[in-house]
Length: 117
Image (tube, rainbow, N blue to C red; front, side):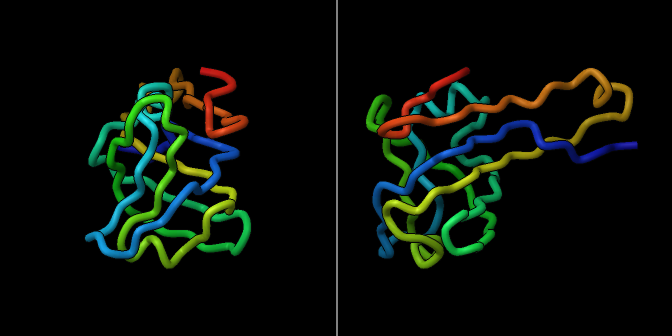
């Protein structure tokens, strides 16, 4: 049996900008992507702690050390700069594999820099 498990979690992420004129996605600083083992183009679920919005989109890579977390396209309607987000990615695993799996959790600090990896 395959199970869906949360493989990566980014907490305390803060939206830095939004751009409505785009097909849609969320831009994340390359360092955050690497720390959480999320790939550009990978599906993520985004939870906005400020307004309760939850949406699914895909990741695009922003410049390393930029601290950018940008909502693009329709996702730009789901939050405002300064809103706090939790970003989740999931993976399919066999039951046996899932028992030994540890989710990657990255907490962001000032300017969306990784506090832990």
